[in-house]
Amino acid sequence: MTAQEIRDYLAARVRVIVATNGPDGMPHPVPLDYGLDDQGRILVTSFRKSQKVKNLQRDPRATLLVESGETYAELKSVIAYADAEIIDDPTAIAEGMQLIRASPDLSASLSASMRDQVKASLEKRVLIRFTPFKYVSWDHSKLGAYY
Image (cartoon, rainbow, N blue to C red; front, top):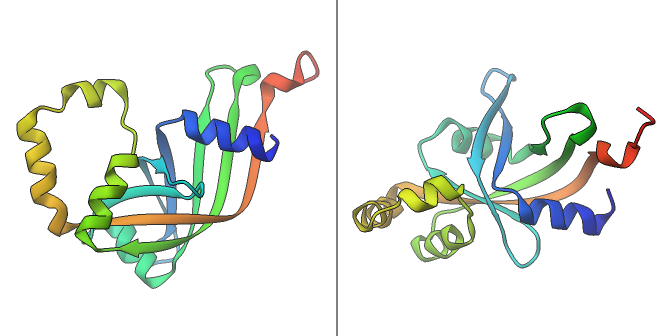
C-alpha cells in the first residue's frame, strides 16, 4: 500500500492487535479499539495495571496489526512497528478517548451510566500513544487473478 492508502486504511478500521514484549520474552498480543490523532499516531487506552502497560514500561517497543478480509483475495493488513508513550494525565486520557473508535454495536450499547463509569475510571487508566517508525502492508485485492 502507498503511504496514503495506509493512512486511509487505518482511519477506516476500529480494532488493532497490539503485541508487546512480555516479561519472559514472549509476545503478548491483545486486541484493542483504537483511534488516530492528527499526526497519524495510534491511540489506545488501558488500565495502568494491565500486562501490556507493564510490558511497555519495561520496553516501549510494540508491533501493531490491523487486518481485514474474509477470503485470500480480500486480505488487507498493515503492520506498524512503533514506539509507545504512556500518558497518565486524566485530561489527556479523556481527550484521547474521544478519538478512539468503537465498533458500532459497542457504541450503540453505551448508556449514560456506562459513560459515567468510564469517566470514573480515568484515575485507573492510561492513554498509550504509538508512534510508528516503520510500516509493512499488503492488499491482496490488487493482485487480481495473479495470486
